[in-house]
Length: 341
Image (cartoon, rainbow, N blue to C red; front, side, top):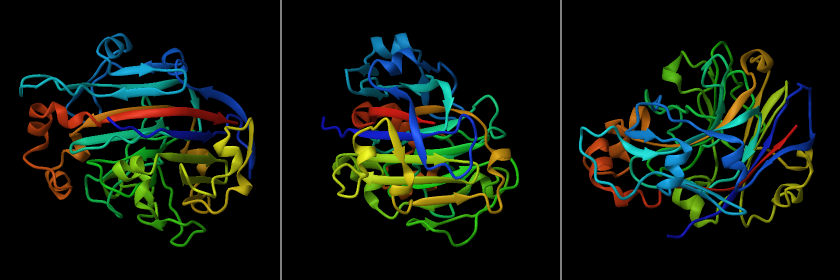
């Protein structure tokens, strides 16, 4: 099985500051750090997925999770045939014990029925605590079910960095908040704006979104390009997201080297820029955890119209039950998560 290794950088504001551009390393998560400083959530999938999230002991015993000196692998079961009476395919959901605003690099799980997410939120207080979706492959302007639910960020609501379903490209970045928050129609960003209303309770939780301009930002194309770097910056004035493929010539040296300090003013135009023009970022975002998960089917990937549009056959739940080997490529391969404050 071929895998791509990618990296994630996260910039966070533990003490809020305006117009922040220079940041210092606060935490580095590599390999064993994910077992020591993250929690494995043995919970019912909040998105109704055809999965059972297992604890760390089970994940390690069943080889759903393992680490080396420089990588984390996190996957779902790909050997067990299920019946309709089984609770779901075993999978993994991990959450940082600390709360941050941040940036991430990953191998993107790929395949029909998959719904991988790398995100930040406070799941005990969603959506009041916010959500930022940094990676999420969904149709611009969405459908009633094409929602970005998980996040990497330090916002009172959610910010999604990496999320998508059924290996559909490209990635879409979005914000989801629990109160009034809107984005201008025209912004200084390289991505394509979608919805401008970030309120979770309007437009079926589509959030305010920006589509990445390149197909290799998610799924198989992302993996075939060797992975890459996603970076997110949050200040009191904006949320920025950048993306570079692994072999891009314009990757900033402080990103590619994992430097102890970074200067985002040298990173060029972000793919997504969410300013505080009509959105009080401080009031709609709070400290959140970093979360990686891999669910199957559920409220987005399992919707018949979305599942069928991706060229997947049968029904989503039947596909998950009957085709374990189809999920051999459904895994996260995370080189590192670096958090700067």
